[in-house]
Amino acid sequence: MFDIIVLGGGPAGLSAAYSAWKAGAEKILIIERDKELGGILNQCVHNGFGLHYFKEELTGPEYAQRFIEMLKSTNVEVKLDTMVLDVSENKVVSAVNSVDGFMTLEAKAIILAMGCRERTRGAIAIPGDRPAGVYTAGSAQKYLNIDGYMVGKRVLILGSGDIGLIMARRMTLEGAKVLACVEVMPYSGGLNRNIVQCLNDFDIPLYLSHTIVDIQGKERVEKVIVAKVDESRRPINGTEMEFDCDTVLLSVGLIPENELTRGAGIEMDGRTNGAVVFENMETSLEGVFACGNVVHVHDLVDYVTAESARAGEAAAEYVKSGEKNAEIVTVKNGEGVTYTVPQKIRRTDNKFTEVFFRVNRVMADSKINVVSNGEVIATFKREHMAPGEMEKIIIPKKILDSASAEITIETKCEG
Amino acid sequence: MKEMICIVCPKGCHLKVDENNDYSVTGNACPRGAEYGKNELKNPMRMVTSTVKIEGALLRRCPVKTSVAIPKGKMFEVVQALNSVTVKSPIKCGDVIIKNVAGCEADIISAKSM
Figure 1 (tube, rainbow over the protein chains, first blue to last red):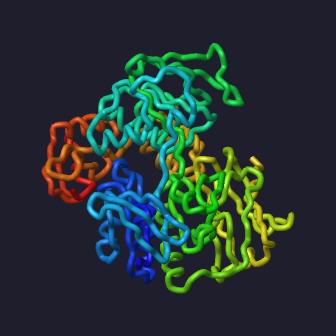
Figure 2 (cartoon, rainbow over the protein chains, first blue to last red):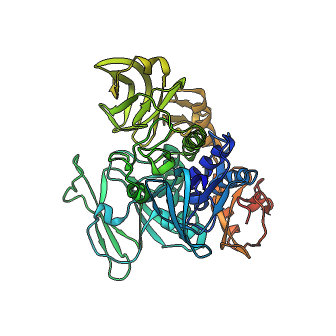
Figure 3 (cartoon, helix red, strand yellow):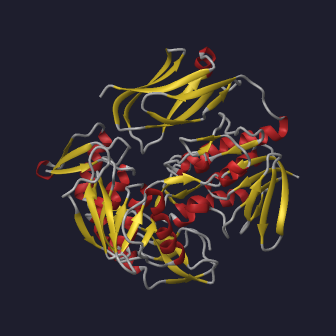
């Protein structure tokens, strides 16, 4: 019987396991399906990680290595190359690998840290032929940075998420010609610094409010047709542009990978595509916690680390003293708010509660209101908010104490 | 007059930098923006990250980076200098792989122990 089993050895799982150990849990196991720890950080060879957590700028592999080294000073066990098949309601994990074969492992607490995967061409239904040469940006990144293969020579990128922007620079530096980055929304989904350093530095044009209307090619991609879209994101006739290219990279969003979560019958949030969680990252199933991109997709790995540390501490606390029973405050999404994490807050002794959320459009000079019973009980000012940047408010205990059993987070845009 | 987006913080101020007037910056909301705008025109620097071939390790590529930022114009030269390099496992995170790459005051160092 393990104290805690952590599913996934990426940044979330590493941080959760380390924090659980520091908080006093003893028998901890990380199960990872890849051959090494670190998850997607291993293929993110660019820098920009760790500015918040380590106060220095690291590459992905360096960030992972810091945690792998930290784990060496603990007794946390690791099973690599191991696939988890099922998590049951009574916290039995079924897994398989080529050394142990099929195994069932019991735990007092489980931390779900499986991360997310990329949306594919099928998920966004791009019309056209089905030739070779259409990749998600992350798989192209793995081919290039882990295996050493270039996936193409003339590249068009659909979507302006950070992975797409990073790959625009990476492919260019390795000798490919990146013709353009095409984004259906009127704003970029990536960080400003990536637009500047990955597109502008290499004179790669960014077409906002544009999308791919046709992919042509028999064996391999030969041509891609791009058109401008109207306000309801419908292509406008007569605005088509042709690009002669052999490769299309898709950077069109990430989906939390929750097959195991659903299999365990855990309550899900249709907005985040992750589990509904309490303020301590516990799911609707007692003793099962979730953290990182499996809960909601984060902008920065530093935030994943911080969130996962909270999950790890909470799991250790659960192993020690069991479930906390307290009144629950439900958090609702108001005007301009796409989702919040947590979705539920227990009235505990915590001095404050952090609530993370995303807004649904770019906003200048805005207010974030916490509303209870139709009354604003707290207000936070922001100069700038955008869907691509996760927002956070800190609700003090005093405010939460004054709230009813349901609060709404809403935005008021004044600019 | 050059226009650019400041990348110091997520706000993304639209800066205007006047090369003919001692690189004076307008459109910035804070002093850090003024400094960014000036440096970005006078002497833009970038970190470069890439991979080199590795033998004897679990995987075939070893991630590497420049030890400090290098002049932006030297980026391609630096990446090209990596094409002919093969390292052998074991290698430690931080090991110097190329000293003073492409004549820059920067080394190429390993970003992973393999």
